[in-house]
Image (cartoon, rainbow, N blue to C red; front, side):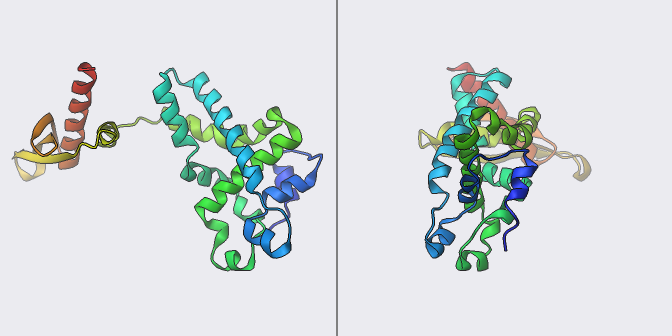
Length: 227
């Protein structure tokens, strides 16, 4: 059973001119089909565009990077998993109107369904109140999470290296080539190989994982110099 959608309106201090838009934003296609009404799919389309623009502007203002990095970062911040987190943070699933089957199968917690509903919510606010009022949701839910992710240090060099080479369909392999020291104070040396036999980089660490990350970092530095 869904909660009163008016609670959502009050939470963001919004007052819809056309309340039916908010109702539609919370209406999943399963409910719409059973009750001969409109679903949130068209509003989701608008919300997606609004979110892309808003997040793009936020990153432009807060991240001094080139277009490629900004584009990649925006894609991370508006992907399904990020939208799911935004929706969960405001318990959006509790306000959804779902069909009987979707209700029984746990639809209120499905990531794709919640991601779509969050975009539909933004779409409804934008159509009814305009871009500036949409910021009431963005400032309360989206931008604080993005701000946290900007200040977190990203040390997953293996993932970065994998992303860099996968577009060229190259393969990477990490091998521990040496292990020194007593059990309580080991030092591992890892090496990165591309396509099976091309040595790309080498790194050391107190664990195999740390050595592999450092090898990936050395490889990234080498590739950056060769550009």
